[in-house]
Image (cartoon, rainbow, N blue to C red; front, side):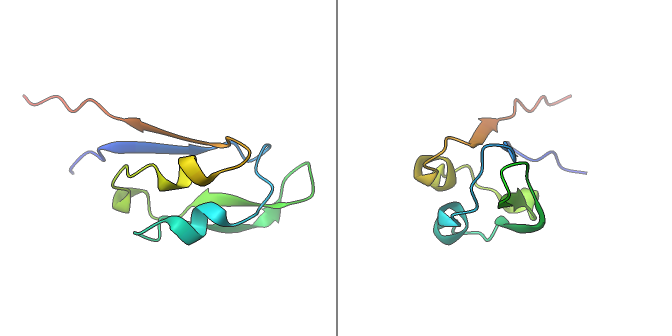
Length: 77
């Protein structure tokens, strides 16, 4: 199995469900959860992590700084 080059994390407790991240993602990696966070919002969630290209659109757009993207180090044997 090929390792995913990017790791995308969303702090569900900070997300206010504005959907800005969902609207700017070119690969449809995100959507809103049906669950509700402690603030009473439907938070963004990662639904297609293998499609993430690390463009940073979602994290740049997030007004609550709830999204973090990290590039994974891939080691070759």
